[in-house]
Image 1 (cartoon, rainbow over the protein chains, first blue to last red):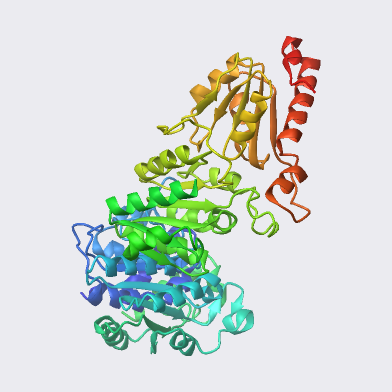
Image 2 (image 1 turned 90 degrees about the vertical axis):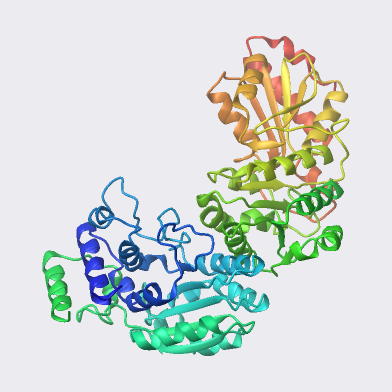
Length: 268
Length: 319
């Protein structure tokens, strides 16, 4: 069995979204491969202690993609089957956005434009503590509208946070439409480069490319923060969700749930 | 008071290498001693307060003890949501310093004046709110905030009004400090710069206890309840909006102990209109000692109209 298999992660997302009658499915689907590759090959974690002080950090700044991270944390054994099964039931601990009180969730995010600054602080702490921790932070392309993102980029470059690896989930959509319609982003990689980052653009669903990209960025301790612009597809993995921004908000019906599940099963 | 702040900061940083000072490019001369004594613990985050708070949260998660400095108009007000989500929700040991609170920046206008910071800060769960009146309270409040090892907001207002205590004070969580004793029939409850004003007024002949409130949140409801039970009237003074500040705090406490008339003297629900000195702005807002005296007398007259015991009205200030 492949660890952190994207198909299995998407199935968990679908099951959570269906049983919890929740939204943000497309937002979780676009980041599945990014998280799968990070958790499978790159994040140095202590399975016995999710608070281990020497761990690598994985900050999900686009907190509304949290179901994809829940699936990974479940695979790590930090979340239980009951957590997944009872998603959104009264009195349960897994919320619809990233919450720092959940094991393995490093920052409270979903109010956008927070996680990158917190991650920069964690990366600076690792520098001051002289550890070799890497700090990965996943932000959305819509999230780039937020002013604090650009404050944090200046900060990361100025303080030479070469242990900070920013991944942009560039799925070209945000809540109310395409990023170009709502707030044009221009050349994202060039913007990061202009802010002093080592930046590269990758196919965010190509696991081998992500693997190589994460490795190259991690080992390069050259005084410059890192950025990976991951070109992704919102709703990736289920044909009728792909590139369809309605799946930012749409809840699954019995019919769409069955159709989505059968597509995933066909691709297993 | 500013020298006391610098001393407290340097002492904390020297004693504990985890202490980091973060500033949003403010505090030029204030941090000379700190930068000389602990240069590696000084981080200028640039003119970017939102990021600064997030960075402080990340540093605290990495084991550090950040002290985040800004003008009160920006820290905590501009960055309230960062303080809520990044720091308070996780109860991280981050201390926020809001300098120049009230009308200190009288000539710069309403953007730099801060009369809503207490109201904002005290509505956030887990955030302690401290408002020292003089250098002795500042030293004690800084130590207390640091010892709490949880989120704290330290409000620094007008700092050159002189001492209200004869010497160093100790301060526990929520403690109110009695700075002048009267017959107990009435009480002036003040915070920050207005404690001096309260003392001037009792020195002018008003029979009242004077309490300084350096820890607005949490506040010792037992002591406050005791004052409510003993006094026939309370006057609260603050260089802050009457909405949500210490006056509101006391009024809320009164409703759950013993009903007693409370006069809230602070900034009415308005912005400053004109430019001028600090003293000018106090007059504009009727917070100078003369105006406050008149307002207290008016209040005592009105209390007399419905008080069961009108005798205390006669003990008002001679006009």
